[in-house]
Image 1 (cartoon, one colour):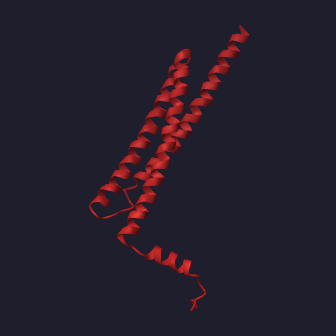
Image 2 (cartoon, helix red, strand yellow):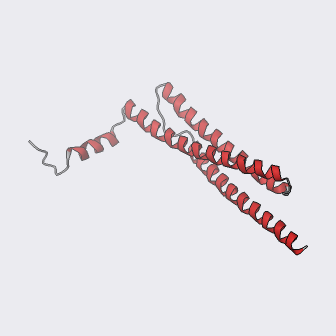
Image 3 (tube, one colour):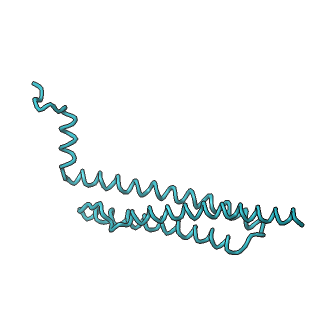
Length: 145
């Protein structure tokens, strides 16, 4: 016969899965959390790659102020730190899981990773805008001469 509660069997199964705290459920939740960290890490590495390409073009031209190079270097350090912090969070979750005690809380490291990545993106955009401003200013001063 059917269930008289009005809920489908899928709804009941979903509610049961949420409240169940078996080792397999904890392992699956830890995999989801670490996957999200991996996606943020991949984005950071992609931005680092783009930044290195732009930095190489700037070094080739060689007519930019030192502070612009420092801003690119600072952006690189922030994004690299984001990757490191995310890796530490994954390591903590994996280490606890290896001992059989799965935990989804690596001490706020994933939050720090995301904040550092967002700051790195903001610095990257700022450095691109400032690069264009410096180029525009240089072209305008040549036109006035």
